[in-house]
Length: 143
Image (cartoon, rainbow, N blue to C red):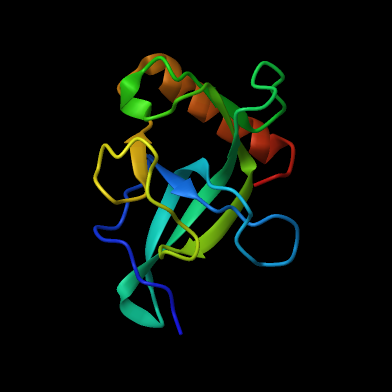
């Protein structure tokens, strides 16, 4: 039995509420966390479903940044974050966009949907930080 799908599907740059898997178990993590959507593709096994690539997010140690990490401020309401959050672009997974892996956003800006907000790519500071994190992750061999 498959979990119900969320509609509409997210877009690259959206920040969603995700049960990011922990370890190698391949099971949803125990807590929901924000995750940026990096890529969206059709599910070849289900033409109505999508697979999304998301990056790990945490609000812990946001001042300590490693290669491939991007810190996003909660100050910009477009992001939909309640705390400053660090995203690890070198720690990504591809998941079905369904209720097993994604949960309704706690801020309910988009109703009963996992979308919390989106990266504000019109903000040059955010755009440069994202590009720098991608280059760092590639240089460190994490992408």
